[in-house]
Length: 247
Image (cartoon, rainbow, N blue to C red):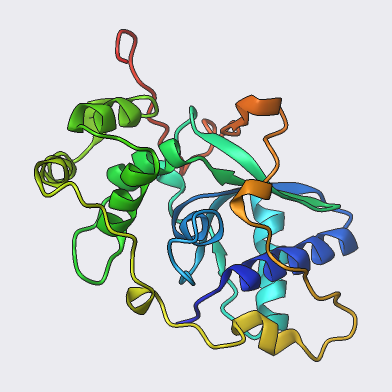
């Protein structure tokens, strides 16, 4: 299975922008999941896929598939399989602004809520490690503080009971929220999947160094960042909105 380093992911988006320019197409990508943990928080050195919501969906999916073919990687490297977990109240900051493609990354609070909603328990998954990391990043001290963050984006009843039990155990434990260790992250080739496969293509400009989190610009609406796109009309989307009276 392919895995992608931060440099790979930035490279892929540059190539996707190139494909979109050829098609006179403009669009937006909203990143969540492991890609954000890898790109923004440096929690993992690589991720197995790029989970996102993107629009226009069909055209960007086709352009991304072309990038995959040319790069020699899976065509669905950019996928929207987690679209059912997106909230209309989600919050993002700008990650990349290219000529034909704008890429946004989920903020830590929203990412924590989504990780809790979709939590998978097992050694092969990193969800608990990611949740611990985000709790520490947000400096949350109590179970109630974590619940309050989650309920900003989804009603409490949407969260599986296993998630609530796991959160209680985290805060009842030693209080140590370790950073995920590199040796437990997805394997990546030393040069990266994309960098090696496309190094011979003279028509594609190599990407520059990846900016650190402190250099990420604010969202388009200023310091408030950007809220989720309108995905209520998507047949695959299940938008969970807090009911009136919930905090």
